[in-house]
Length: 148
Image (tube, rainbow, N blue to C red; front, side):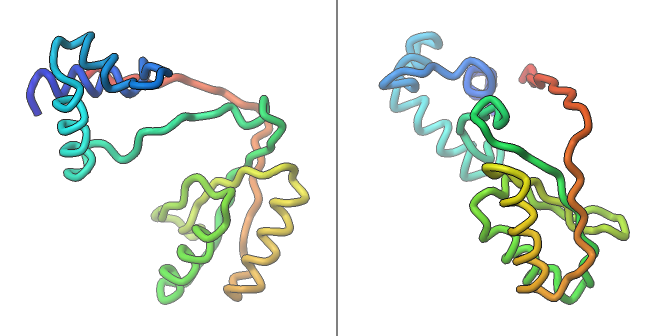
């Protein structure tokens, strides 16, 4: 990564222009071409520096609920369970932790009854019975920017 890559990362993580041609806007701010910005972003995405570029929405302000879930999944069923979890459109994160509850994922849906139905379907489809639904009691939202 060079200084231009770092400047692009600083722009896209928190100051992404909401315009018809956001990469042109970023290019103008950095005095480089739009194609240069696009090529650099593609390279950083292909190398894993950028995982995704997309909006983050405050789900409750859009009328949705979200929850954190945890499941106790035997090692030999991890791939199958993760694939099934990822098939639900409301799953935003899914990861393994070193814990007896070793698979953690977040769910967003229209209401908690929908999430409970999805969790029941997940349990029935995978045979995993030990799935926790851990809705937040209080939300502490923080904004994280990394000065690159």
